[in-house]
Length: 324
Image (cartoon, rainbow, N blue to C red; front, side):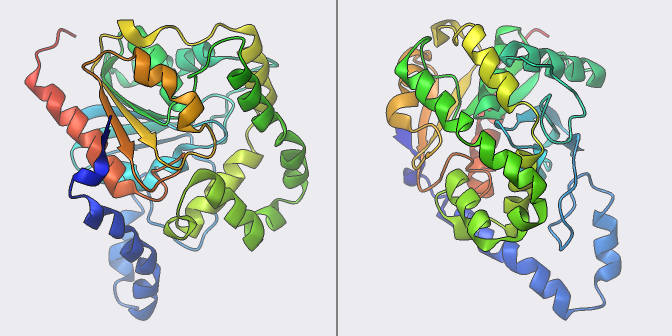
């Protein structure tokens, strides 16, 4: 497995600092406001003072079709920074998974990865995308694998993917209990949303849960993650569905070109336990890359590096002929 440390992408990671400083620059200059108004037409508005609102999907850019799938409890907001970078070369679509904040889709008392993939597949049909490039983080990676098995993926980029456990197993039990233990806190947070999104301690806890370097994550992204978690209706249904449904099938038969990106400091599903199946079962042709210095949702703290790693995989596929 290779490491992205060997590639000259450190300047890209540093670029996150000026991004956070941008609002201060606009504050000094009063004249550029008309230019900023043009950006409002984009599905991905620049970070501002307003609280995040539910987003059914991000849809921006032009070029090769690229589907971005967010993780469990989160929303399309987690892709905003990365999507804006990829939109210069791709038509990017990042929907809210069913049962998550902004989706407007109820899942019932039990659901699973297959049901989530059904909903995304219907959205692809609505867009007229027979196939597309897919990048998924955590639960989104698991959904991406299922879509690839259905023949919908031209390429597949898995970012700290979920599902790397056997069933039943201690690993499955531990990850289920980890999320189940959050349920009482989420119920309290729903009744104290203002406190949860504005309290520095809560924000820092959320940032450290999802990232390695909390200071590199814009505050707006942290607030969006907290709000998405509080408004996620799928916590118990997905945990129940996980107990009833089958485990992730063996990955050795995937024919889609795959790039696996593991987060070095993944506190949600640590690599030591939950990356083994992906490392062992993915075809030898699959890229295996350890992304240094990032947590479970690396798009929040290293959007430049993640956009580059996804784009590289998409561009590499253009040299291959495909029947669609």
